[in-house]
Length: 308
View 1: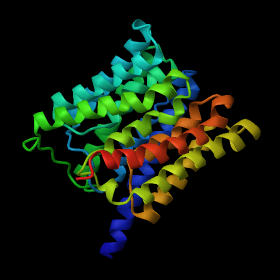
View 2: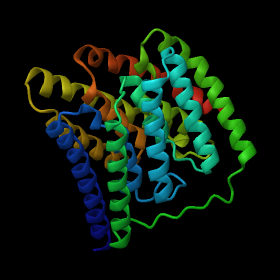
View 3: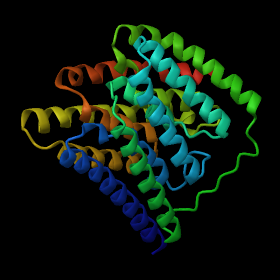
């Protein structure tokens, strides 16, 4: 009975995460603002709702403040800082890293929240408003799940956060990110380093990350996310003319099954799953090729950066 109860509780978390994801797509469809679709939201949902224990050392207040700040900064860069794409993205990466360092947290999804508007050329505050609303709903949902014992209560402690060590770590990441991203960003082949992949790069560079212990399994999860999102969008939406919300529904179910089967929950996979839902047809055809090549490079590189 106890095992059955755990399975039912886990199913409830999957179901609720699927429901909120579909609400985001419905809001975008009804309003006509595609900027409402924020792929990294599913990554945050994966860590905050689906995972039995939240993978980030962060409290609810910081989740809201940091995510909103990151989204606002990203849109502001597009609107007011008219420089080359490479330098825009480097500014976003630097801002996100400094924000995480100052806030003493490893809540790395804010990197995607900051960088995503630059990737897609989003220059409207609607994106930031949508991110703030969805983040609020995630926090509220997590609080309710904890209250009704659907998931464990999240605790936050920053006592062991070594500021000097973390500053050096982020400085090294900034320099390496600049080197590996210069050619893709300068040539506009940006999906070699899609926003969730940048989050994965930072995650794998963390010596304490559990993902480093199972890189092949994580790579296969990311590969499944890329292929599922791309193929479903191509077949169901572009060729059969079904609504994108159906693509998102089927794609999320497939990813959740993969999470359960592999017993590996990696939030950036959720972000990669939804990226194809917002791409145009031309970018969509190249996305899986660029993404797979990018993953084959950044995962081993990030692990090698901190072998010790």
